[in-house]
Image (cartoon, rainbow, N blue to C red; front, side, top):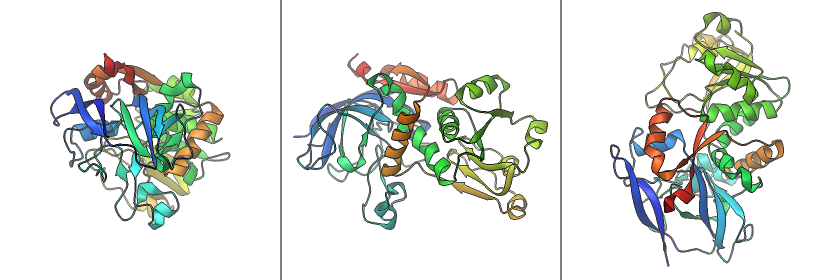
Length: 353
């Protein structure tokens, strides 16, 4: 029988979150049921709940940075047992057979597209999926991640399921490591993990911030140098020097100021998705140095597990501020002001409050 889940939902783009109940599907043979302990708060949650990207289905239960404990498994499940710690990220399904899915790049599924943990089509119950601002979740085993961190670190693990993989995947793909100069633009939920991961990979890490007040924070996160991007002299001093720049900023901004910092064959990769498009970049700095501008979307399931294991091995978790479920609207308002170091995480025990 389907189970009743408690949650917080946005009933429209302009109304506050409020308690909400809905049905989770009955356990299928390949399913894992998870009681949610912590759920990170991603900027995508805000974009979706406020319908800034359009297409939001209401009521909306966001949340795709989920960690919890397994409470039941289907008869075909072999990789998880009751009591295990487990995670769920941004996806809960894909077609499974297209060229991208065949190499565990499910986020680039070429037929149906990946099914989001929330606001995606629900092929079992109909309607659309509900995310991690809820008491529990049921997900097929192939989209469940194993958590090896200590239980005391679980709240800091939750943001790895989006912020961690969103930065790890492009850093790995474009070869961040020893001998490489890597820039991280933005020191927020994504950027602070980008700094930590790039430093753990062995790269020379340079953080970009608009605020001199964040210089010491960036260095504590692992940055070797910090550039105040509003300082033209500091920017000019690094021209033609970066192998790779990861831009995590989720607001429209000038990309030309960054592309000229790349050395020949360098790449600027965007992972922040703004509500309004960036200004079109100047083509000349790209053509005359064979520079590239690219994008990257989260990571596949196998790579997400690899990222979790990497973070466990290197002792990495997100820097978080814990909140109660009832504080989510205030948290969204603070996110818009960049007033968090560096990720809100919901203690889902507060649902019972």
